[in-house]
Length: 217
Ligand SMILES: [Zn+2]
Image (cartoon, rainbow, N blue to C red):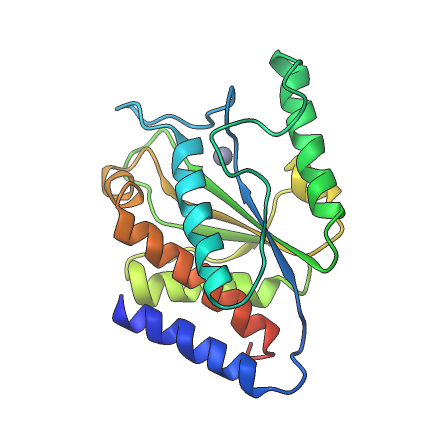
């Protein structure tokens, strides 16, 4: 944790030292799912949307500590679209509203928080995806930092977000999709529910974006 905090502090010091940062983004934090749409559910009943929200709120708090004013797509366990709709149209309305929020934000950089799920419980570890050339170095740095700071066995490589992910297909700003772990893997599931681990993930995300802004990657 100490190493992580010093990484965040040094990223911030680097950003502050530069007269003109390479870029200035408004982080838009998307806690995936919410409300009627819980996302993935572990065999023990842990719901993805709650973990996404917990990590998103910690990430937002840390951004504020460093003088950034993030936009949160949701701050409670609710869906985002028109609550009068139900079923498939409610899901579509929710996703459309998320796109609107991102697109309405000037200099947005989307950070979308999700969890993975797979049939084989052996597979685990955070996986970072990106949209846009601006986001690629951040995704690659995050994936490296996950390995060096959190999970030495994680050999995953950052990849572009798949074309069928509606939110990322529709947005015009850069962004990353952080699949923070697998609900189907017992080690990941325990860590993802741990307050300290959630804070470490938030540290990596915040220090990563500050470093990108400072031109440090
Ligand atoms: Zn998800």
